[in-house]
Length: 85
Image (cartoon, rainbow, N blue to C red; front, side):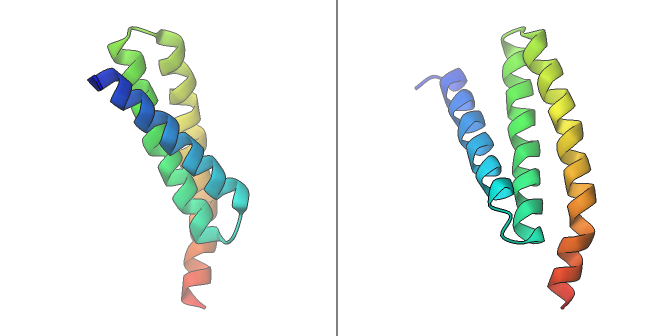
C-alpha cells in the first residue's frame, strides 16, 4: 500500500469514527472526542489536498476544521462539568 492510499484510508476511517461519536451523543466527553478526531481527519484531508494539489479539498477541510474547533469550544465546558460531577 503506497503512502497516499494509507493517508486516504486514515482520513476516511477517522472521519467515519468521528461522525459516529458525534452522532451517538452519549455524553459531552464522547462528543468532544468526536470533534477532536474530526480535527485530525480534516488535517489529514488537507494534507492529501496539499500533496495532490487539490485546492477544493484544502478549502473544504479548512472550513470543516474551523467548525470542529468551534464544536470543541462549545462542548468542552459541558464535558468538564460532567467530569467534575
